[in-house]
Image (cartoon, rainbow, N blue to C red; front, side, top):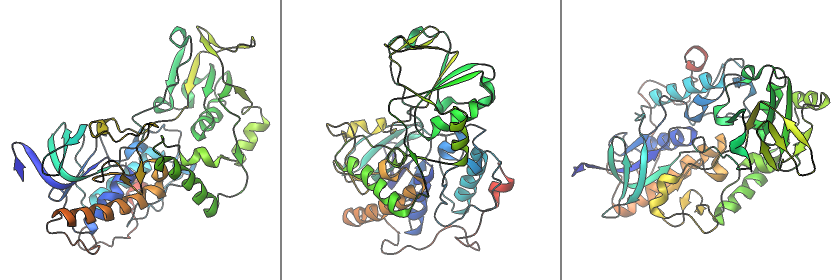
Length: 388
């Protein structure tokens, strides 16, 4: 229904990465129709979520634990092919198979209070008035850049993981990599094969994890992230509490001295960085592998943030407004967590719709399937191998 240019429907899903597509899949399974009962809005130019922006040297074989989307496995992918192509093609095939009708590119500028218990979602293609919002905007659009004295005086190049072009561009240069997470170590090991010299700087001593990543270890890590979200603190990534996996490549890099870590510098100079104890490192490039923050600024009008700076959530539901669900946020930022969060959010949303008289035409009590007739929901997808 359109009222004064505002389109009413039951649910708006913001973001079409892993979490958003999972949520859309489960909305289809409970009987809501795309563009009638719900709509998926994505600001990216094409399918693939944040994966489409990953650097070419991050091949599919280097990806740590890409969990399949619900209802369709990713099989037969070439491990030497860029992950941006493999996963982009997989997501595109998934959207087509389940007829999710993702709207893109669409920018969401704000979500605010509407009338009659509805929210208003203001976008570049108009305004929607849903009964609930499933926010799946991830973190890629909010790279975190620390600030250090003298940063503006540096005569070389500064860039973030979000802009990382691959290692070849740094051939013959002296490069400082800042950050002790998975991206920082991957960048460092790649760049060291091409650069004249590399330096690794981290705020704290990196922790490397020996042995397999067990299910028990994973549950404990997720529980630590969940606790921060329940307390309304900014979420940390699951990886940040598990440590870095000790792979054969990491061992070789440590033996060569590539992963010899320096403590955080105190200031940036025109020609590099310096410490208060007199140490100086000259470089042409500073690469900030310093992570990302949740992209939730469009939710600011709803005043969901707690004094601690984060949005307090129980399961996926924002405590300050139960119509808003956060998926791919905090403990659900991993690919398997995003899938589970998508389903949990839809279950909660459907309870809300039953209470408020929404979900018209939906089979609100059961999951009804989805996808196009004549195709099995669990069918393997060949597109990542040949498409892209």
